[in-house]
Image (cartoon, rainbow, N blue to C red; front, top):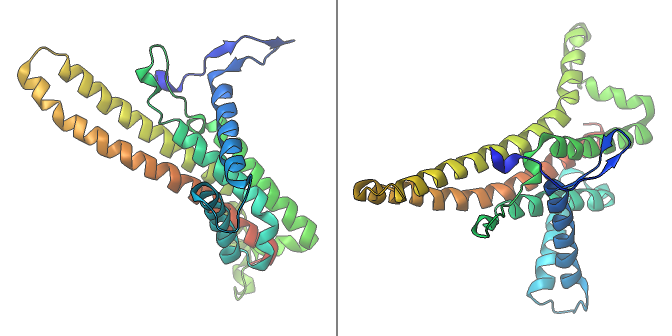
Length: 251
């Protein structure tokens, strides 16, 4: 589990608070810089007929815009900055955590989304926006979200609490889904990698030959992890869009 340990790079203390610059902070900065380079490279010198880089940036933007249009409707365009930022940060953070930096002596990649504190903060941003939009747009009428249409009045004492609990666990599900997916995937890759190294360096020809099987699994799981990185970013963005739809349209 050493790959998930937060280690200080520059030790700093502010009174009784530890504000050290850690490997987690470093990879967050690297994530933001990577996004900035990606966006700047595609947006600078934009042409009517886009090149590959510009087309990649525009494709991501249109993908997020299309997702919001399908879930929220015409008003979804207002939330493109939020959903785009969440999607890009999670996607890049997930992918950067898969870099084979272990090939460099003393180096290893760090996946910031494998820590619940990070995913919980992202979920709070998403859910806080939903609440702010809901109350700003509808006021106290926003509570009608917990009263489904067509439900008999005598079932309200049961249905309303269930709807409220279902609504309140949304940020927890957002945070846990991303955290569990990233953590479990990285542990599996580490375990398979350990099998490959141990069997290959055992000195036993039969065990060394048997190491081909976990190596093949490792390659397949690594490819699957790249897909999971993108899927988890999309799921987080999609669910946030669905929750925003509830706040905007009170479905």
